[in-house]
Length: 135
Length: 135
DNA sequence: TCTTGATCCTCCAGTGACTGGAGGATGTAT
DNA sequence: ATACATCCTCCAGTCACTGGAGGATCAAGA
Image (cartoon, rainbow over all chains, first blue to last red; front, top):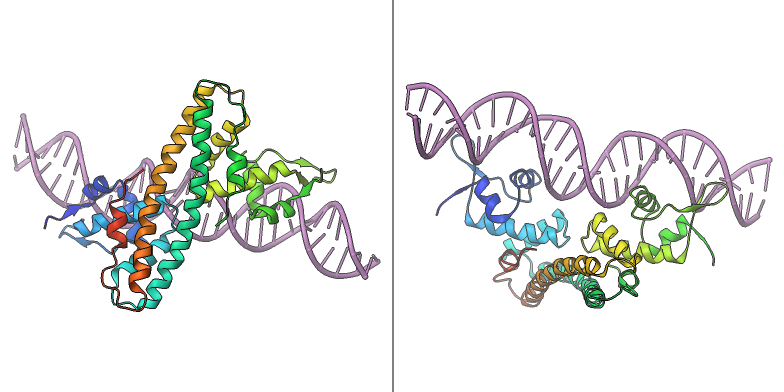
Protein backbone atom coordinates (compact mmCIF):
# COMPACT_ATOMS: atom_id res chain seq x y z
CA UNK A 1 0.00 0.00 0.00
CA UNK A 2 1.12 3.52 -0.80
CA UNK A 3 2.79 5.44 2.00
CA UNK A 4 2.08 9.12 2.38
CA UNK A 5 4.17 12.05 3.51
CA UNK A 6 3.07 14.29 6.32
CA UNK A 7 1.81 17.01 3.96
CA UNK A 8 -0.53 14.61 2.18
CA UNK A 9 -1.80 13.29 5.51
CA UNK A 10 -2.47 16.87 6.56
CA UNK A 11 -4.42 17.55 3.38
CA UNK A 12 -6.52 14.42 3.74
CA UNK A 13 -7.43 14.99 7.37
CA UNK A 14 -7.53 18.76 7.74
CA UNK A 15 -4.98 18.57 10.56
CA UNK A 16 -1.98 20.88 10.18
CA UNK A 17 1.47 19.47 9.64
CA UNK A 18 2.80 21.00 12.84
CA UNK A 19 -0.14 19.62 14.76
CA UNK A 20 0.50 16.10 13.45
CA UNK A 21 4.09 16.32 14.69
CA UNK A 22 2.79 17.65 18.00
CA UNK A 23 0.44 14.65 18.28
CA UNK A 24 3.40 12.37 17.79
CA UNK A 25 5.28 14.19 20.56
CA UNK A 26 2.49 13.64 23.05
CA UNK A 27 1.96 10.06 21.83
CA UNK A 28 -1.58 10.65 20.59
CA UNK A 29 -0.29 9.45 17.23
CA UNK A 30 2.28 6.62 17.15
CA UNK A 31 5.91 7.35 16.24
CA UNK A 32 5.85 7.52 12.47
CA UNK A 33 8.17 5.33 10.40
CA UNK A 34 10.82 7.33 8.55
CA UNK A 35 12.40 7.25 5.11
CA UNK A 36 16.18 7.00 4.84
CA UNK A 37 16.39 10.77 4.81
CA UNK A 38 14.30 11.06 7.97
CA UNK A 39 10.90 11.98 6.59
CA UNK A 40 7.80 10.64 8.30
CA UNK A 41 5.65 8.17 6.37
CA UNK A 42 2.02 7.26 7.02
CA UNK A 43 -0.52 4.61 6.08
CA UNK A 44 -4.29 4.57 5.57
CA UNK A 45 -4.71 3.48 9.18
CA UNK A 46 -3.02 6.72 10.22
CA UNK A 47 -5.48 8.69 8.10
CA UNK A 48 -8.36 7.03 9.94
CA UNK A 49 -6.84 7.53 13.34
CA UNK A 50 -6.11 11.17 12.67
CA UNK A 51 -9.61 11.82 11.31
CA UNK A 52 -10.97 10.27 14.48
CA UNK A 53 -8.74 12.50 16.60
CA UNK A 54 -9.81 15.55 14.66
CA UNK A 55 -13.47 14.76 15.16
CA UNK A 56 -12.97 13.92 18.80
CA UNK A 57 -11.07 17.12 19.56
CA UNK A 58 -13.72 19.09 17.73
CA UNK A 59 -16.35 17.51 19.93
CA UNK A 60 -14.48 18.63 23.01
CA UNK A 61 -12.68 15.47 24.10
CA UNK A 62 -9.23 16.03 25.58
CA UNK A 63 -6.17 14.36 24.11
CA UNK A 64 -6.06 12.07 27.15
CA UNK A 65 -9.68 11.00 26.62
CA UNK A 66 -8.93 10.30 22.98
CA UNK A 67 -5.95 8.19 23.97
CA UNK A 68 -8.21 6.07 26.15
CA UNK A 69 -10.83 5.76 23.40
CA UNK A 70 -8.16 4.71 20.93
CA UNK A 71 -6.74 2.22 23.40
CA UNK A 72 -10.27 0.86 23.81
CA UNK A 73 -10.62 0.21 20.12
CA UNK A 74 -7.08 -1.06 19.66
CA UNK A 75 -7.04 -3.77 22.31
CA UNK A 76 -9.86 -6.21 21.63
CA UNK A 77 -8.07 -8.50 24.05
CA UNK A 78 -8.62 -6.03 26.84
CA UNK A 79 -10.69 -7.07 29.82
CA UNK A 80 -14.25 -6.67 28.68
CA UNK A 81 -15.66 -5.36 31.89
CA UNK A 82 -13.07 -2.59 31.93
CA UNK A 83 -13.66 -1.71 28.30
CA UNK A 84 -17.40 -1.54 28.80
CA UNK A 85 -16.93 0.66 31.84
CA UNK A 86 -14.75 3.10 29.91
CA UNK A 87 -17.27 3.14 27.09
CA UNK A 88 -20.15 3.81 29.45
CA UNK A 89 -18.28 6.63 31.12
CA UNK A 90 -17.71 8.28 27.74
CA UNK A 91 -21.30 7.59 26.86
CA UNK A 92 -22.52 9.64 29.80
CA UNK A 93 -20.35 12.57 28.77
CA UNK A 94 -21.58 12.31 25.19
CA UNK A 95 -25.20 12.25 26.28
CA UNK A 96 -24.82 15.27 28.53
CA UNK A 97 -23.27 17.17 25.67
CA UNK A 98 -26.02 16.17 23.31
CA UNK A 99 -28.80 17.34 25.57
CA UNK A 100 -27.21 20.76 25.93
CA UNK A 101 -26.60 20.98 22.21
CA UNK A 102 -30.25 20.13 21.60
CA UNK A 103 -31.34 23.01 23.79
CA UNK A 104 -28.99 25.34 22.04
CA UNK A 105 -30.22 24.18 18.66
CA UNK A 106 -33.87 24.65 19.56
CA UNK A 107 -33.21 28.16 20.79
CA UNK A 108 -31.12 29.11 17.77
CA UNK A 109 -33.84 27.78 15.49
CA UNK A 110 -36.38 29.92 17.27
CA UNK A 111 -34.16 32.99 17.04
CA UNK A 112 -33.41 32.40 13.37
CA UNK A 113 -37.11 31.94 12.58
CA UNK A 114 -38.47 34.75 14.74
CA UNK A 115 -35.94 37.28 13.67
CA UNK A 116 -36.34 36.70 9.99
CA UNK A 117 -38.11 39.68 8.57
CA UNK A 118 -39.39 41.08 11.82
CA UNK A 119 -38.15 42.71 14.98
CA UNK A 120 -36.21 40.58 17.37
CA UNK A 121 -38.47 40.86 20.35
CA UNK A 122 -37.20 38.40 22.90
CA UNK A 123 -34.04 36.57 22.12
CA UNK A 124 -33.87 33.97 24.87
CA UNK A 125 -30.65 32.29 23.79
CA UNK A 126 -28.97 32.91 27.11
CA UNK A 127 -32.00 32.20 29.25
CA UNK A 128 -32.54 28.86 27.54
CA UNK A 129 -28.96 27.68 27.61
CA UNK A 130 -28.17 28.96 31.09
CA UNK A 131 -30.56 26.44 32.61
CA UNK A 132 -29.31 23.47 30.61
CA UNK A 133 -27.95 20.54 32.59
CA UNK A 134 -24.27 20.91 33.43
CA UNK A 135 -21.83 18.15 32.61
CA UNK B 1 -32.20 42.35 44.96
CA UNK B 2 -29.33 40.80 46.87
CA UNK B 3 -25.91 41.31 45.40
CA UNK B 4 -23.43 38.47 45.52
CA UNK B 5 -19.70 38.37 45.97
CA UNK B 6 -17.47 36.60 43.48
CA UNK B 7 -17.12 33.49 45.63
CA UNK B 8 -20.87 32.96 45.79
CA UNK B 9 -21.17 33.49 42.04
CA UNK B 10 -18.44 30.88 41.57
CA UNK B 11 -20.31 28.40 43.77
CA UNK B 12 -23.59 28.94 41.96
CA UNK B 13 -22.18 28.57 38.47
CA UNK B 14 -19.32 26.14 38.87
CA UNK B 15 -16.93 28.66 37.35
CA UNK B 16 -13.77 29.32 39.36
CA UNK B 17 -13.16 32.70 40.95
CA UNK B 18 -10.00 33.28 38.94
CA UNK B 19 -11.82 32.35 35.77
CA UNK B 20 -14.59 34.86 36.46
CA UNK B 21 -12.00 37.60 36.84
CA UNK B 22 -10.37 36.39 33.65
CA UNK B 23 -13.72 36.64 31.83
CA UNK B 24 -14.00 40.21 33.00
CA UNK B 25 -10.50 40.94 31.66
CA UNK B 26 -11.39 39.68 28.20
CA UNK B 27 -14.80 41.39 28.34
CA UNK B 28 -16.79 38.15 28.15
CA UNK B 29 -18.36 39.25 31.41
CA UNK B 30 -19.09 42.97 31.92
CA UNK B 31 -16.98 45.02 34.34
CA UNK B 32 -18.45 44.15 37.72
CA UNK B 33 -19.66 46.91 40.05
CA UNK B 34 -17.53 47.25 43.17
CA UNK B 35 -18.15 47.83 46.86
CA UNK B 36 -16.39 50.75 48.59
CA UNK B 37 -13.52 48.47 49.44
CA UNK B 38 -13.15 47.34 45.85
CA UNK B 39 -14.86 43.95 45.91
CA UNK B 40 -16.83 42.85 42.87
CA UNK B 41 -20.59 42.47 43.23
CA UNK B 42 -22.94 40.51 40.99
CA UNK B 43 -26.66 40.14 40.26
CA UNK B 44 -28.91 37.29 39.20
CA UNK B 45 -28.45 38.36 35.59
CA UNK B 46 -24.75 37.70 36.00
CA UNK B 47 -25.50 34.22 37.31
CA UNK B 48 -27.50 33.49 34.16
CA UNK B 49 -24.92 34.94 31.84
CA UNK B 50 -22.12 32.99 33.49
CA UNK B 51 -24.08 29.73 33.42
CA UNK B 52 -24.65 30.32 29.74
CA UNK B 53 -20.94 30.92 29.20
CA UNK B 54 -20.05 27.80 31.13
CA UNK B 55 -22.40 25.68 29.06
CA UNK B 56 -21.26 27.26 25.85
CA UNK B 57 -17.56 26.75 26.60
CA UNK B 58 -18.26 23.18 27.58
CA UNK B 59 -19.93 22.64 24.23
CA UNK B 60 -16.85 23.88 22.47
CA UNK B 61 -17.77 27.46 21.55
CA UNK B 62 -14.89 29.93 21.74
CA UNK B 63 -15.11 33.00 23.94
CA UNK B 64 -15.45 35.11 20.78
CA UNK B 65 -18.39 33.04 19.58
CA UNK B 66 -20.02 33.37 22.96
CA UNK B 67 -19.54 37.12 22.85
CA UNK B 68 -21.40 37.24 19.55
CA UNK B 69 -24.18 34.99 20.87
CA UNK B 70 -24.55 37.19 23.93
CA UNK B 71 -24.57 40.33 21.82
CA UNK B 72 -27.28 38.66 19.74
CA UNK B 73 -29.51 38.12 22.73
CA UNK B 74 -28.75 41.48 24.31
CA UNK B 75 -29.65 43.72 21.41
CA UNK B 76 -33.26 43.05 20.42
CA UNK B 77 -33.02 46.26 18.45
CA UNK B 78 -30.31 44.75 16.29
CA UNK B 79 -30.97 44.35 12.59
CA UNK B 80 -32.99 41.18 12.36
CA UNK B 81 -31.45 39.88 9.18
CA UNK B 82 -28.00 40.07 10.71
CA UNK B 83 -29.12 38.42 13.93
CA UNK B 84 -30.81 35.59 12.07
CA UNK B 85 -27.70 35.09 9.96
CA UNK B 86 -25.50 34.79 13.05
CA UNK B 87 -27.99 32.38 14.59
CA UNK B 88 -28.10 30.24 11.45
CA UNK B 89 -24.34 30.11 11.28
CA UNK B 90 -24.20 28.85 14.85
CA UNK B 91 -27.04 26.47 14.07
CA UNK B 92 -25.03 24.80 11.34
CA UNK B 93 -22.09 24.34 13.70
CA UNK B 94 -24.38 22.92 16.37
CA UNK B 95 -25.97 20.47 13.94
CA UNK B 96 -22.63 19.24 12.67
CA UNK B 97 -21.55 18.65 16.24
CA UNK B 98 -24.72 16.79 17.07
CA UNK B 99 -24.44 14.40 14.16
CA UNK B 100 -20.91 13.49 15.13
CA UNK B 101 -21.91 13.05 18.76
CA UNK B 102 -24.75 10.78 17.66
CA UNK B 103 -22.30 8.57 15.79
CA UNK B 104 -20.02 8.45 18.77
CA UNK B 105 -22.91 7.62 21.06
CA UNK B 106 -24.14 4.81 18.85
CA UNK B 107 -20.68 3.29 18.69
CA UNK B 108 -20.07 3.60 22.41
CA UNK B 109 -23.44 1.98 23.09
CA UNK B 110 -22.51 -0.88 20.83
CA UNK B 111 -19.13 -1.27 22.52
CA UNK B 112 -20.63 -1.12 26.00
CA UNK B 113 -23.28 -3.68 25.09
CA UNK B 114 -21.08 -6.07 23.11
CA UNK B 115 -18.28 -6.06 25.60
CA UNK B 116 -20.38 -6.77 28.63
CA UNK B 117 -19.69 -10.30 29.71
CA UNK B 118 -18.02 -11.51 26.55
CA UNK B 119 -14.95 -10.95 24.46
CA UNK B 120 -14.60 -7.64 22.71
CA UNK B 121 -14.55 -8.77 19.14
CA UNK B 122 -14.54 -5.70 16.94
CA UNK B 123 -14.42 -2.32 18.58
CA UNK B 124 -15.11 0.08 15.74
CA UNK B 125 -15.02 3.30 17.75
CA UNK B 126 -12.38 4.85 15.54
CA UNK B 127 -13.69 3.51 12.27
CA UNK B 128 -17.14 4.86 12.97
CA UNK B 129 -16.08 8.30 14.12
CA UNK B 130 -13.32 8.79 11.58
CA UNK B 131 -15.82 8.91 8.74
CA UNK B 132 -18.20 11.31 10.47
CA UNK B 133 -18.95 14.57 8.68
CA UNK B 134 -16.47 17.28 9.55
CA UNK B 135 -17.88 20.63 10.60
C1' DT C 1 24.12 19.19 -14.03
C1' DC C 2 22.50 22.95 -11.87
C1' DT C 3 18.95 25.52 -9.95
C1' DT C 4 14.34 26.58 -8.38
C1' DG C 5 10.41 25.65 -5.59
C1' DA C 6 7.92 22.71 -2.78
C1' DT C 7 8.17 19.95 1.08
C1' DC C 8 10.43 18.14 4.80
C1' DC C 9 13.19 18.44 9.28
C1' DT C 10 14.07 20.41 14.34
C1' DC C 11 13.59 23.86 17.62
C1' DC C 12 11.42 27.55 19.76
C1' DA C 13 8.38 31.42 20.76
C1' DG C 14 3.51 32.90 20.90
C1' DT C 15 -1.72 32.31 21.55
C1' DG C 16 -6.23 31.13 23.78
C1' DA C 17 -8.32 29.78 27.74
C1' DC C 18 -7.70 28.93 31.75
C1' DT C 19 -5.47 27.55 36.75
C1' DG C 20 -2.96 28.21 40.86
C1' DG C 21 -0.22 30.73 44.02
C1' DA C 22 2.23 34.75 46.32
C1' DG C 23 1.60 38.72 48.96
C1' DG C 24 -1.42 41.73 50.95
C1' DA C 25 -6.10 44.07 52.34
C1' DT C 26 -10.80 43.46 54.20
C1' DG C 27 -14.81 41.33 56.76
C1' DT C 28 -16.87 38.60 60.29
C1' DA C 29 -17.11 35.81 64.31
C1' DT C 30 -15.48 34.81 68.85
C1' DA D 1 -7.78 41.55 69.57
C1' DT D 2 -7.05 37.64 67.11
C1' DA D 3 -8.33 34.27 63.78
C1' DC D 4 -9.81 32.78 59.53
C1' DA D 5 -12.29 33.20 55.28
C1' DT D 6 -12.62 35.83 51.37
C1' DC D 7 -11.32 39.36 48.59
C1' DC D 8 -7.79 42.02 45.77
C1' DT D 9 -3.78 42.33 42.02
C1' DC D 10 -0.18 40.34 39.60
C1' DC D 11 2.26 36.76 37.60
C1' DA D 12 3.91 32.20 36.29
C1' DG D 13 2.43 27.67 34.52
C1' DT D 14 -0.48 24.30 31.66
C1' DC D 15 -2.83 22.42 27.60
C1' DA D 16 -3.43 22.25 22.89
C1' DC D 17 -2.08 24.03 19.42
C1' DT D 18 0.08 27.57 15.63
C1' DG D 19 3.57 29.87 13.13
C1' DG D 20 8.15 30.93 11.92
C1' DA D 21 13.41 30.62 11.61
C1' DG D 22 17.06 28.13 9.72
C1' DG D 23 18.45 24.40 7.23
C1' DA D 24 18.18 19.68 4.49
C1' DT D 25 15.94 16.97 0.70
C1' DC D 26 13.68 15.95 -3.56
C1' DA D 27 11.43 16.16 -8.13
C1' DA D 28 11.17 18.76 -12.37
C1' DG D 29 12.74 21.76 -15.79
C1' DA D 30 16.49 24.76 -18.38
